Length: 135
Ligand code: ZN
Image 1: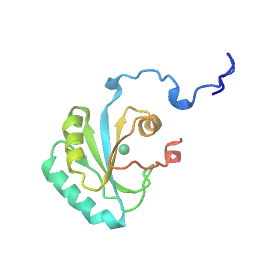
Image 2: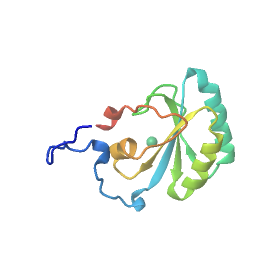
Image 3: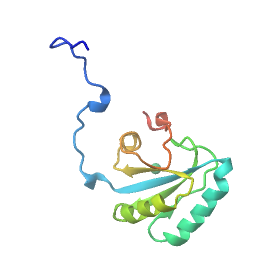
């Protein structure tokens, strides 16, 4: 295997970049976006009803969008979660999301970084439309 001569290494790929640390106290709240489409609409509606009953007082449930909105490539609804409720809500979703995918991001005041760099997925991940956030 050939070795590179000293000094000829190219710049490391972007995923090795050292990122300045950010304080978790920047996180004002979290969003969990439940994704669905025409084929999973009824499962999404049923999960939403269960969430409204079971997580009442721990989430604020947003509108049921039967079209892609903002950076979300699927139909979706939003759950707004206070920072202090993250553990119980995300734990509940991890155990009870069924076949639905859930995109979770913090809200730090920098929407592009929150969606692009700080995503958490339950189920499968999707490619976001970051152009909707100026990305
Ligand atoms: Zn969101």
